[in-house]
Length: 428
Image (cartoon, rainbow, N blue to C red; front, top):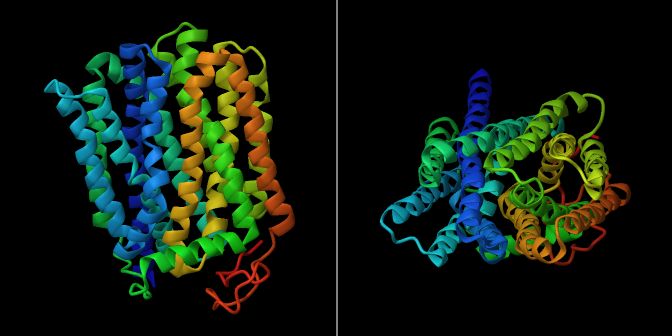
């Protein structure tokens, strides 16, 4: 038992460090790439296209790639994804140095890199459940620590990215991002045990993906949470993408402020992620995730008014705290309501739906700021966030109890909206 526990702790630690490494690199690019496009082209629309190119492949490949990840195995898919993203990310500065990087080619490389995102995130959640176990509170606490690792990267990355862009230039920053994927692949390969393929590996991929989608349709909490999160993600990604625009057009500042604003959000989210395990001692994951989701909207209300840069930063810190309190517990609830054999596929569907919302926000944010100025788009983002949080709340209030103890995947004759699949029990 002690050996298994030690391997589990090592696996969790490796996932946390790998997350910090790869996402810190990605956060460097989050500052470098859009600022580079914005300053070299002068086009807000082109900037939003580049950012959206990372999300758009989710619509085309997210669910199918989740099926591939389920067949390959979650750990193996994580390693493969990191290696491929290393090659694709390194290609951008390499081609730029050779004078061969056109704007369409940049969009293509960003598009291909984004194709790995949804199944990677789904695989990461599956691996996390494998090394943590099936207890809701333990999984929620570990998930919050993983979110904390993510937010650490969000805190460290943007200011570092802004400084490195000034010192080294955007191409060098992208090379650092590429190297971070290699570090993450090495850590997961070394410290996370191979969990093997699901026992039903011979099932047709299309059948398993269909079963996973059926689980999400029948479990109404998962359904409402997924739709609500898709909507809030569209507003959230639009807001994050708006930072360079607001800094340049409203605050009349430079790239350093972009990094500072992103760091404000990341710092708040890190605090929320670290607070979540403490709050979970006194409440359930469902209640914490729902309360924090609603409070995200409250935190963003000041965006409806004219704010100085420091006021905008305070709003982002508070919003980030509630985002951090939401994500870990929400992920734990979702995982434990999904049958083990379908987790990678179902989480890929959830991640795909969420990132589709983000894609919509990124595609529209540039046009919104060009046509409506800087104030109206922020008010629209607040309203969209409120709609998504309302759906999240409805799912909890009406369907937030334990799943019924039916078979994990009922036969066709047994399936009905009133008979959700058997899942691991929740512990509210």
